[in-house]
Image 1 (cartoon, helix red, strand yellow):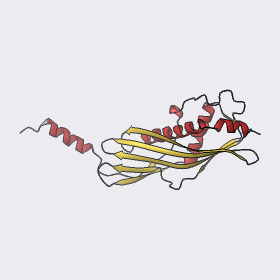
Image 2: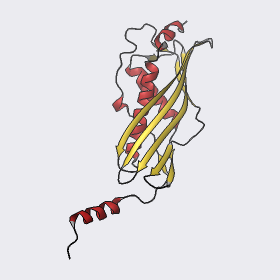
Image 3: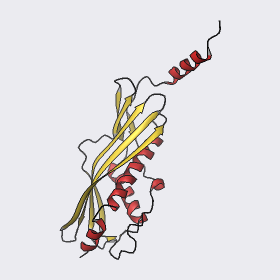
Length: 197
């Protein structure tokens, strides 16, 4: 007796489906492949920062959660490297690409990493979503706050379940989006010039 081809296809797909999720620890490695020049600094004479500082203000220190489609199975995703260094590298690259310099002159840019949340919905392949929230403050050399704003960056990805590369691409894209939102924030450039005193 022959087995119908459609039944074989269903059996093959079922064999590839994930039945249980394991926790993951992701090494964050910033890569600026998705970052673009926004022309934000242009010819600003005050596009200089004394320093850029990033602090971890997250109340939830995990990077996210993995879920298994159609089942209550979940697993945590954590970072195996320094989240603050990764976020600082991304922000520094975004600023440099857009004409800002960190030269020891000008105001300080103080950024708090408020949240990093990713979700992976796994089955045969996985869909990935991420959201990163930052609060930034420009502060003069005398400690006066010149501007403050909160931004959120988002990203999506699709690919192999539990893939370190997919997580890195996803989180780097969300960070790039958050940094772009920061650089384009209303009043950021004006405050940078006014805060340069």
